[in-house]
Each structure stands twice: as structure tokens, then as C-alpha cells.
Length: 313
Length: 297
Image 1 (cartoon, one colour):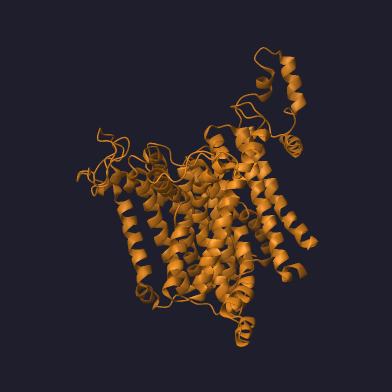
Image 2 (image 1 turned 90 degrees about the vertical axis):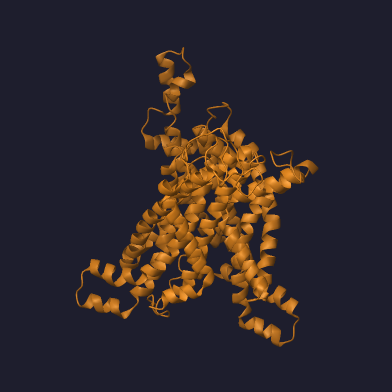
């Protein structure tokens, strides 16, 4: 188990380094002389040179990258070029809304997806199976923003059921819970398709396994067979899928946040890129990458905990 | 993870049989999807000739609804947008741009990915290194690539295409390698080698042509993915810039009039759904016909 975790963590090091390098390169694109900007227009040349030396701006790029890594490890991501606030504090504020959104999405979409997939597998070849397949194919073929637009027009505007702009408060307050419904529905709709599809395939595979035939042969109720013998095994690939789809989920979150003006990391990243606020963009992209890596690690751990075969290897 | 398809020997190599097309035709749904996709492609290609109006010409007849609604007119079949531009014409031109992004990205990424996959399968000494690099690339979410490249290069179709290419390469490389490994285990490869054929001939005539069909099927599905992702990036404002017509961007700019004239945002979105849905259905059907092993990918 420990070894498994260690290997997985080692695997994510190159990705993390790559993203850090990218973040560093992004900062190199900031126009103008950084030392001059910090010193201010009236500073003497000596002061500028001193700041340059302090920041290591006169050293080779490789050394500068090292210094950058050192600063990032200390939690220093620089200052936003537009608000002049520390990037880290901006990101800290945006992180929780994003987490809220992702959790609120997974909480409803994963069970619904699993249920749909299981129902389809139990009724293989019948109309209900075809309907589930159709739903999931349409689901994976629809851009997230289309779900968002439809929900906004109908649930938000015509029927005025839920608010659709901004975040009123944390999820545990009533307004917050009310306000997260549409964003979470949007993100979840795009996630049901892959989950249902994977559950169906996986359940069908397990259903033809020997132990299921044995379970049926000894006269267990169909419900018991499905819940205890099929689903338990079928869900393992589904959990992996959630890990594999973490990037997809992240992309969906970026779009959902942008449309619903949800103050999360994704909207921050897009806004920063469009405004050419490169330090903020760098920070937001780093955090998104970190989220992705952490989700994958959690999935790997769950996977290992559920499947003893992984633990053994 | 990368070894799902690498089960050589057991599965015989299947070449597309002559009855292939006939079997596809029998699958009504796939046939319909193929026909619709082809029609959309032709319409997009002919956009300059069949578009009823200039897609950039602004008029004073703003936000006209489509013809089937009460205020619709026959002059503007699908209505006009917030600047009074003809929606149908913009839709045609936008589809053209969106399809172009998807095709170019899939073609370039597919070609590079295939080359990597073939090399990894043929020269096993490079396999380890190539596949490790591949795994790293594979683990970077495409949306991050898009955001990062847009930040570096600046927003525009180039940034999007670059991101889609980088996202396509590792997946295609993995599928190609898997298919190629199966072929590599066949006797005719050994036979070709023993009569002293040069590596290039072996790779092209013996290896590539034998697995190219399954790779192409995968590319159909990948094309759908690229269109979807490209549209999303454009929607975020990182792709095509106004006044250019591109489906994702059009949907995004329609957000301002979402409640007064919903068709400005929903029609381009619907177009994307139709294209991606057809490509997915077609790809799924082709895959089931040609190479059921790919089902899990």
C-alpha cells in the first residue's frame, strides 16, 4: 500500500515540474523590467540594480527557475498585476468555491450515473438499456455550456426557481445551497454520461463472472446478487474512471464557473488569461494542476482500499 | 494502464472485409449519423456559395427570431444576432471554422501520435522511454493545456489548435502502440524481416497498413473530442476572436441576449451537439465493426 502510494506520487512529479516550468515561463513573458517597476520611476539606477540582484534577475534562467521553485515552495506566487494583491491570497479565496462546486456535482451525479448504468446492465438489450445508452452518448456529446444555457433559460429565467449569477454564500447557508443548484446541475449533467456508460460496461462484465452465477445458483434474490456481488466489483473501474475524468471535470468546472460567475479558481484562471494578468494566471493554472493531481491520488488510494488485488501488487 | 490493449497473439489481425460498408449501412443509426455529418461538412465547405447573406454584414434588424417563431421572417431563416447579422450564414461559416479546428488538430496530432506509436512498437528499445513520456503527457488535462497555451501564445485559434494537438498525441500514440504490438507478434512480420526487408518497408507496408484501420476509428472519436474541447475553449474567449464566426464563440457572445433572443446562443450550441453526436455515433459503430477490443478505451 505504502509502496503503491509512493509510486503514484513519484509519477506526478514530472507533471508538477512541467507545470511549474510553464508557470515560470509565463512569468518571463511579463512585459517591462520587473526591477524597474518595483523600484518605481524615481529610483536611482543603483537601487534598481540592487533589487535586480535581490530577486536574482541578473542570474542565468536555470538559476532563476531554481529561485522560482524555492519561492513557490514557500507559498510565494508573486503579485497580481491588476489588483497588486498577493496571488496566493486571491487563490486561497477562490479555492473553496471550486471545491464546493465539484463536491456538489459529484454528490448527485455519481450516484445517478451508477444507478442508470446498473439499471441498463440489468435490462440489457431492452428499451430501458437503449435509453440509458442514448442519454449517455448525448451527454458526452454536449458541451457543458449548452447545459448551462438551457438551465439558465428555463430553471433560472422562465420558472425563476434558482438564482444563476454569482455565489451568495457558503454551501451550508440556505442561500449558498440554493445558489449552487444550477452550477452543480450543469457540471453533473456532463458527468452522468461517462459514469453511466462505464458502470454499464463494467457491470455487464461482472455479471458474466463465475461468482455471480454461483450466487444465482444458490438462490439469492436478484437484488442481493446485484448489490452485493455485481456492484461491489463493478464499481472499481468506475472509481478509476472518476480519476481519469478528473481533467474533464476540471474543464467543466472552469466553464461552469465562468458562465455562472462563480468565484472559483477556474473563472480566475480564464479572467487572468484574458486580462493578461500573467502572475495570477500562472498561480491559477498551478492550483488547477495541483487539484488534478490530488484528485487522482485520492482516487488511487480509494481504488487500492477497495480492491485487495491492487494492495497485493 | 497502458497495457490494456497489449495482449498479443490471442486476437487475430482483422482487416476491413469487403462486407464492411454493407454492414455499416445495415446499422441505420450509424448510417444516419454519417449522412448528417457528411451533409454538414459539405454545407460548411460550400459556405461562401450557399450562405444567404454576408456573415459579417451588420444590419438594423437586430435579434430577429428564427422563421418558426411569431416575429420571424423568411429573409433571415434562423434570425439575426445582436448586431443584425444573419444567423444562418454565421452558422455556416462558424461550422466551417469549428470543423477546421477539429480536423487540423486531429490530423496533426494523429500523425505525430501514430508515428510515436509505431516507433515504440517496432523499436522496443525506445518503448520504455517513449511510453513514460507519453504517460506524463497523458496525465495533463487538455483544458489546462488550452489555458496555458492561450496564456503563452495569446488567445486565438492557433493556441486552441496547438492545445488540441498536444492533447491528441499521447492518446493516439497509446492506441497505435497497442494495435501495432498485436501486429508485431504476427508471423508475417518475422517472415518479412527474414527476407531482409528494410525497416521502413516493414513498418509501412507490413505494420502500419495492418493497424491503420483501428487507429482511424479511434481518430473519429478523437475528432469528436477535439471539436467539443475546441468549442469550449472558444466559448471561454481563448479561441476565435470577434467578429470571426466560430460556433463556441458565437454561443458565448449570445449570452448577453440569452433571455431576449435565446436562439443566438442556443443554435450554435445545438450545431456543436449535432456534429459531436454524429461523430461519436459513427465512431462507436465503426469501432464495434472493426475492432471491438478498443471498446474500453
